[in-house]
Length: 114
Image (cartoon, rainbow, N blue to C red; front, side):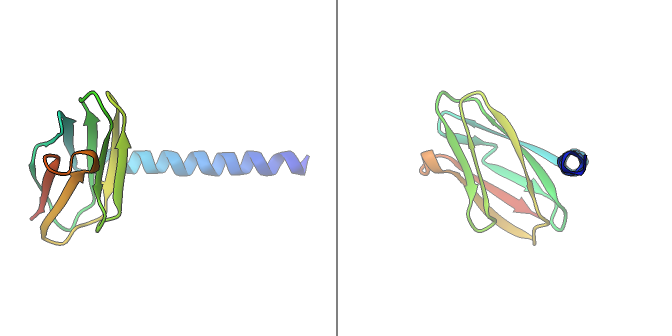
């Protein structure tokens, strides 16, 4: 009996933690970024400094994209038509450069924390 109780307890704890994370992410200020035709739109995005934020990412292009900022340890790969999100810790005021690793010349977005 105890051998079965442990996996059930772990599953319950994991489910509760995951549910809490989703609920927490849902309450954050949310900003939408679209990758399309080798570009990140908008190419300039102002967000509040000192506060966690959520970026929803949509790939409206025909190929994969890799949205990243290595200084912030953010990296997300999306296939065509995919949508996902990332949560970014509170930022100090400043400008943070995000790129689409597959389109480094044109896939650039500046995130400005004010």
